[in-house]
Length: 381
Image (cartoon, rainbow, N blue to C red; front, side, top):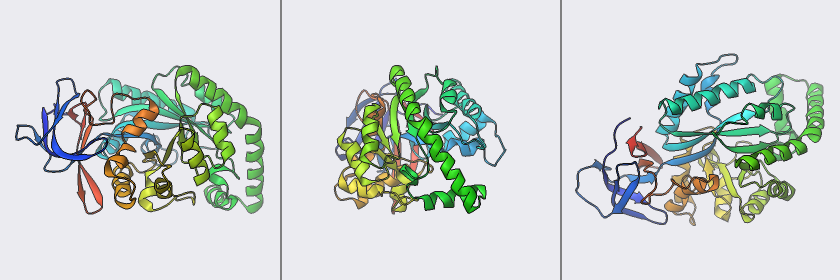
């Protein structure tokens, strides 16, 4: 990781509401000092590329694949975090909320002690200056799981926890409204017969009805007490959104219908959708299209979810394909708006006094290339 240049010149600066040709200078503390007109001063030549704020990622469960690359295989956790971090940073993400699961299937390969190991590795990586991006932790809480509160306890005093999502993957609702798609997924994964699948679904529904409502309330109360931001997940109906409002939710993650997205947005929640949904042209599970929500004005934040590089690509794609969305507005969905939603006031915009988290991006055809990444003025990729 190198020392920072004093000046970035010959850049197309993506500001909050416009794109200008100019230069950007830093102070000695990793902050933006000034934004100015083109200059020939010594410094980093951006070659006419875009200069953007570093991207902010609120929901990626990509870390697990580095820690458990094969069933029953556990990689060294520090090494796994470093590999994940390198991929994140090279995708232009300078602030990341790593999603760790709380509440598991009974036969899940990873358990919550594994999640604690990963959390410890993230925190060690930060303390030992091993990591390129700035990392926080996002707990994905499966409210229908019997062990969700027990699992949450191992994170209760962890200051790195800044976001929790309240998730419920019970069949017949939210992401799995269609039992056909649920059956295809689980029968392929577990090898159930039709009768075994029907019994599995019955048990899951019964379990959720007894556990999910109270778990949601308890987790929400804990989060509010600790100042942790709450996100809902896979809301599909107005009733789901009303419940989220009652639980003091600030972010609506991956609403599955336009109805839920509209209601969430109008209630003041930041509506978050997957960048892969934008890049692919639709949801892989048949739910509402992120581009459709963008065109309707109900999309606020993008998340790379399971493909880190999708975040920068989706921003440029939305700016190109949706008439009402300019490049600054699209970039805001991956920088300033997620920063605001999570309460990070020191980053997300090219503005004097804010952190010099910067990325240099060249657009070749319709696929952007991240050519340089700086965090607090120091080059990290």
